[in-house]
Image (cartoon, rainbow, N blue to C red; front, side, top):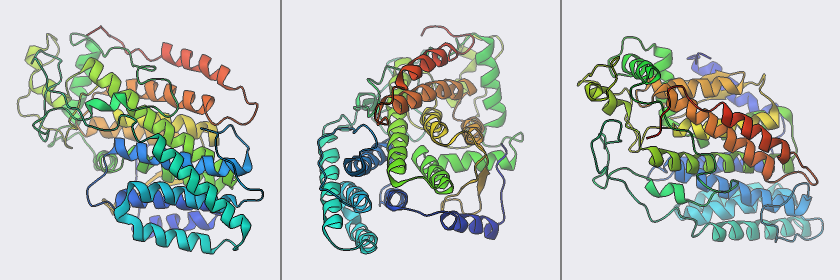
Length: 442
């Protein structure tokens, strides 16, 4: 889909109408508060850490609500709720508990939000019981993730300048490629970071490689005349907004339109953010396994790649700043297709009415009717931004879809649901479609 710049007042009206169209609940309210908390930190939270924080928060909310409602298989399953406890109070206390532990600098704002949210619930044993189980869920999830591999950081310095090998780019720290350790982060819903490793990228000498290098060279350079304003807007938007910031608002709008229950929403946001986080863990394992160079390195050094269809452009500079880690596959694609797989299982492919915006780019409003239109724009954003080959996006799409389907089918299932057997076959079928043309082991 082409993203459209809408009139500011019209877009604002759409945004304001969304919560009025259906009844929000504590789960959707605190999902929004979670995103606001992440966005308000003095130092920007990188998309990988944000996904881990979001998954932990939403799992705590799910575990607290499910301890009361018991509609689904629990995640850890050790919580006990008092009879008649309030699920709304549980969701509020769980989200607040996780966020206040991770972001103590936001304590005053979070405490005020907790007080306001709980004030809408009648005082009494039900409220107290819900708060107690929510606090217990928050402590349980935060403690469980305390030594999950997210720290200490590790970096990567290339040992060779061989054609195809990732090299440091502008903006990299002296230590080299970042997030080398993220492949060792404990997944939330898959077995290991290598479970859905992507197949090798196209060989440097292949026609597919040459075609995709030519595309990003033409449309992804700083001074490209082949990039429309629409594609420039998309590139800037999805550079500013991570997968967590894209898919949680989209999920809220779908959930509010459908009028789904508190328990169903708790499960949706837990699975959504588990899939995003696991997608990012998975993609970093693949990235550092193949260590493919970024387009800006590849285009400048194209005379050394052994491909008879490519030529070097020593002056190439990408439209947006290249992230400091290997190119293949695209992290935004893997995380986003994982999220899309969850949402399509929950609410179908569409039609929906989804509007995305960010304060960082106040003049851009993106409107979508189908989830696939979002991922199409994300794919374009990374190519037109000059930081990814098209085959990076395609590999991320396949990888993310597998992660999202696995997470959804094998976690937090409705009691006595055995749909995971079908999901395993779907993953096998998807894997057979995930090999780009011209691949060769590296």
